[in-house]
Image 1 (tube, helix red, strand yellow):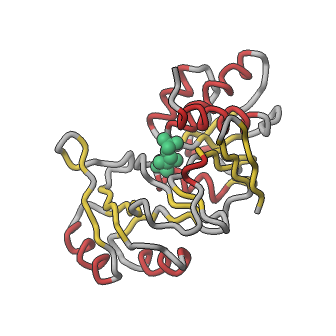
Image 2 (tube, protein in one colour):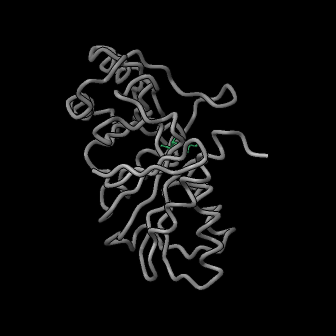
Image 3 (cartoon, helix red, strand yellow):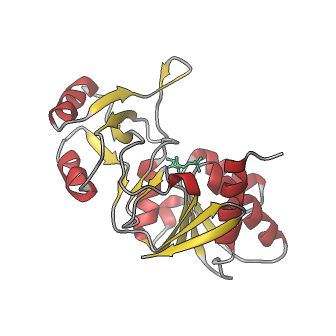
Length: 226
Ligand code: 5RP
């Protein structure tokens, strides 16, 4: 029996599969909502849909392989037709806060490069302003406390991400600082300021790249367009 939130995620994830056409190269995001999408896509592939997927995390890659979804090696990708990804928050301008699962770098490489980006969420993640969820920032491990100090100077309150009492290490071998900036009124400006810090690899602010948001709520799906 699925929880209400999981039912919403499943509805949004399964609806997104209807936008995948034969022959497409598809960016496969990461997270529990994407996992519902992958299960439906696996069924369509078994029925004969021809796609090639580009996974944005090791977890997504494993699940896609289990489900029989054909994948392309990341070094061989030159274009992507459509990416489908989850998010931790989506604001009224369809700017995103992402990285709760720690896959933000690969997600952003794929989501930005894709001709179209569809975001799939549970309705609770639609907010008027980003920032209630701490902003994940991937940083280089070397001298990480120095980068943390620089982020504090920009107004953030960082917490080093841990998993089972160990420092969390991303698929790229980096650390993640979850940073509380309060309400983020100008995501683009905050992103630019953070990106200027040498130790910052990438931020979880995905600004002006979303084409469509599919929201599962109250047993139906709503679609927002840019
Ligand atoms: C991972 C992400 C995920 O898309 C985000 O955390 C949403 O996850 P879920 O679908 O499990 O709620 O950005 O880096």
